[in-house]
Every structure is written in structure tokens, then in C-alpha cells.
Image (cartoon, rainbow, N blue to C red; front, top):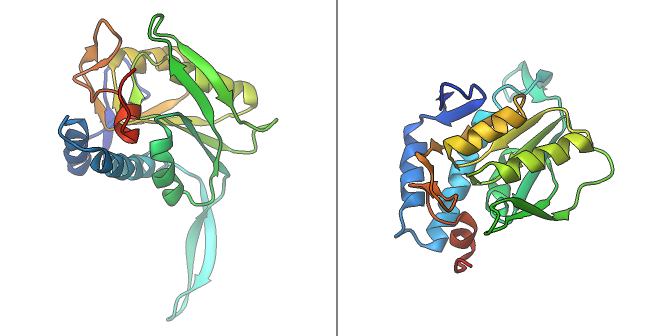
Length: 219
């Protein structure tokens, strides 16, 4: 899968230009897509984006034998952690863990205050010290970027030295916020949408990812 910078002023932002990603993102965003299909598309997009986000993992030679002869392959040499931002990030975990079956899964819970539009932390299930060489943050939407900025800050204080963010749709304002706060963190998304509206929702966006994943009503 190819990726390209999604904004000239945000060099850490990588927006996929794969035809399948564009196709799946379109149907994910469509208001006619039901909950079951929305979940399936979220998993499929996560798989594609995690492959792209992990293209630079370090490897070492691994000797093995095929049914025909001896050969040398490769094995990933680092420990990886997955951190979904609750609740919408939960919809991405299964697919990410399928790609990275030995990865550990940690959880951070945040929600957006509808009055201040600021993230509020309500759950942290991280152990005392970070055991992972790479931590991948999972959250379908990067709107204001507040939750991602705070989550990354928490992970750095925890001891994470290499962090990536994998989402599905980003707003320019959110991607810029993460870049200015954490210029060492690369962002991988399926699409960079036009803007945030006056209510801080991504436009055209897809609505509330958590509500659409879990079949709940906004509120």
C-alpha cells in the first residue's frame, strides 16, 4: 500500500491512496451503512492501515526449512503494544491484533466534553512501566486531536519511546494539533477530510464512530 503526506504542513501525516482503502472508506462514511457492515469495514480498513504503519519494523534473519530446502527468512525483533482509545478504538483492536498476534493490548478511556470540546480521561489500564518498543494508538477519528494529544502524552510519561497513531478519518485541525504537540509521532489514516464544523465534528466525516460501531444513539 502506498501512502502520501496528506497535508504539506504536516510531514508526519500519511494518507493512504490505495483504491481499496478509498472504496471502503466511502461505504464506511455513507449514512446508509448499517452497524454490522460498519464494524466489518472498520476492521478491514484497520488491517490495511496497520500493514502500512508497520512497514518499517526492524527484523532479523531467521533460518528455517521448507519442504524442499534450507532457507533464511525474517522475524520482527521488537515488542509491540496496542492502545485503543475507548470507546471507538475498541472497534479497531481485533483487526490490529490479527495482524500483530503477539502484541499486548492496553486501554485508555477518554471522551469529549460536549461543552468544552476537550478530552476527559476516565480510564487508564496501563501497567507501571512500558514493556513495549513500539506503541500503536488506535482511534477511528482524529477530529480536534485533543484525545490523541493527551493519550500520546500519557504514553510518553509511561515510558513509550516510539509511538504511532492509526486512525481512519482525520481533520486537518486535528492532525496539525498532534503534529505540533508530538512531531515525532507518525499518523496513518484512510482519509483527510475537509474541516471541523462549529461543533467540532469532522466534515464531511461519518458521524459519531462510537455510536455507529455499537448501534447506539448520539447523546
